[in-house]
Structure formats: structure tokens, C-alpha cells
Image 1: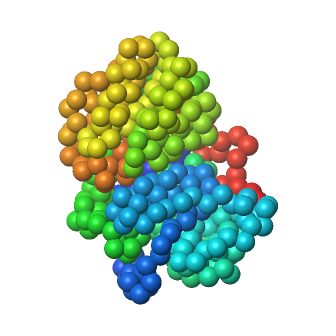
Image 2: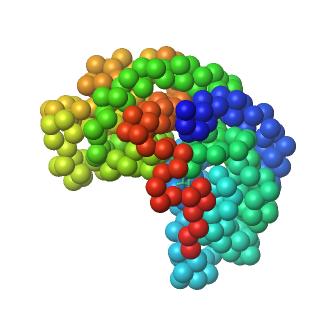
Length: 346
Ligand code: F6R
């Protein structure tokens, strides 16, 4: 069995630990932000961590009304622009805490007076040293090159950060997430069977909207790095602005479809791709009966989850799907060709 699969299955404990062990850090951050509320949050990350950052961007803007921007590291590392970071909070997200350009941007931001926070799995990493504050993903060692449990824990860390910034996040709902993930993991056998039907897949699109756009990015990344599937990743809105033209009969389309504010946009996409006779796999839960009727195939999580808390349980079927598809294709999900666990870029 791949480490990727093992680590995917460890997520309920990893999420509980991340939640339980954050209280001191959370209190410190809360005090700091009560004294001085940032006017802008900037997120800097690469790869899977950057996908988690996309979630953080939506979550913080929705729950705190503080604008969030995604850093472009080359602006600092190659163009050496001296950004005005007055009243900014710069947040780095990195599983290893060793991504070079992410850390260079944090170091520069700290020297310019920004408050810096590292969200990392490694307390002894360079990122934890560089930043004034840290929130730890308590996923324990992640050995597979393909990140799984660290992604889920980074999303959890963003809920905690949103709380610290005064955002409306329900701690009870966070405490329910590990059990919801556990129940999602119980779908593994049926997901493995589904994955077998995609053994010949070489291209696909993944689609999400709002808070689940990050999951579309992350599912696509998992399909690319572990299964070598060319996966283009879109918000439901952007898909309609051109890329829909490549969708044709039997084209694989993977869609995250929770109930709630994003559903009208997602259901519009599902109707269009059905007209085109695409092969649609819909990930949804028991609250969205309409979604269940819309896809050619469906993965339905058993829990009724409010949209704002869907991204963590919803990524689980995607991780399981990618890990099983890699095994079916005879690929080593833990050691994709060309990749190392830590990628150094500037
Ligand atoms: C994907 C993956 C990579 C890393 C990226 C950043 O599964 O593992 O995309 O997420 O290289 O690494 P960290 O998070 O260590 O900064």
C-alpha cells in the first residue's frame, strides 16, 4: 500500500491534533490582532500549500472582510521590489517549512514591518524560525511526495487563523470535521472501484467554486503528479469563459458540488457538460439531492455539511481516487518521476 494512501487515512487524528494543540498559538494571535488588526493579508506558498492558501483567501475574506492577496514571490526574489507592507499580515504556508522563495518573501516582509505567520508541519523548519508567529499543522511526518494530510491540516489552520482574526467560524463545526473525514474514508472501497473505470484516463478537468475552488486545484495537482493525467483546473465560472470548448463526449470532468451559495453556478456547469455528453464525476454530500441526479457518476459523503465546512471532508474522496488510480496505472504515488519532497525555487 502506498504511503499516500496510509497518510490519507491518518487525517482524522491529524486534524484532531491540529485543532487541540493550537490553543496557545491561537490566543497569542488573537491578542495581537485585537491590538492591531491587519488591513491586508498576503499569502505566500507553492504547490499543495498554495492550493490551501487559495482556500484561506476565500475563508478570510468571507469571514473577516479583510482583503487577501496572493504573493507573487518573484516580485521580491527576482525584481527586488520594496513593497509597502504597512498594516499587512504576511502568511507563509509550507508543509516542510523549507520552500526557498516562500521563506525569502517572509524574511523580506518581516524586515519591512509586516506581521509574519508561518503555517507549517515542521516546528524546527526555517519558516518557523523566520516568522514572528507560527501555527502548526500537526500531521506528523509526511513521507509521500504527494501531500495529503498536511493539506487537510493547513485548511484547518486557516479556520483557526480566521477565528484569531475575529472571523465567524463555529468551533463546534471544526470539532465535527475529524469524524466527517473518518466517514468519508469509509467510502474507500467504492472509490477504488470507481477509479478502476478511469484506468485509461490521460486528460481531465477539475471544477470547483468559492471555498471548493482550492479542492479543484488540489485534485488536479494530485491527478497530475501521481497519475500523470493532464488535469486542467477551473472555477466553475472560468470554465465557461473558453475552456468549456475542449469538453466533448466522454471527456472526464470532476466537480465539487456542495449545496449552498455556489450550487447555482455548479449546477449550470453540470447541465452544460451533460449536454456535451461528458463523463462527469460529482463529489457532494447528503444535503444536495439535486447534485446526485446530475452527474454520470457520484461520490456522496454521508454527512450533512454546511458549505463553509465542506472543503476538508470533500478533498478526501479526491485523495483516495488519485491514490487508487495511481496504483491501478502501476505508478508509485509516493515517488512521482522527476519530483523530490522539497522543491527549491527562487
Ligand atoms: C504536492 C506537493 C508539492 C509541495 C510543494 C510545496 O503534493 O507536495 O506541490 O506542496 O513543493 O512544498 P512545501 O509545502 O513543503 O513548501
